[in-house]
Image 1 (tube, rainbow, N blue to C red):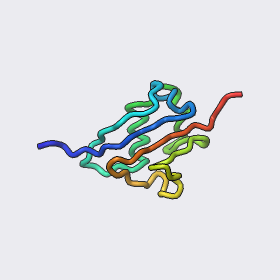
Image 2 (image 1 turned 60 degrees about the vertical axis):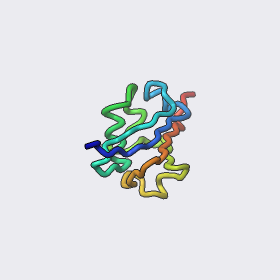
Image 3 (image 1 turned 30 degrees about the horizontal axis):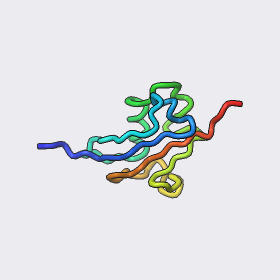
Length: 101
């Protein structure tokens, strides 16, 4: 029997991609047997995809200030932030506003 999958699209922009192997867009097939929130996704990203300087992306259990998160082009603050439950084909975009000077 096939394991159900939750397919989503991840995008990293404005420098955030540098922390994830310089890949700007990727499709993920997550384990569909569990409930996936943004909080779970951030832990998964840390353990599986984050390749450079986690302190530039995460602060505690959330993204650090200066990382914008859009879910289907909507600010995650309007959707419940860490508690938002991912849906099939969601597009999650992380945009870095942190730039050196």
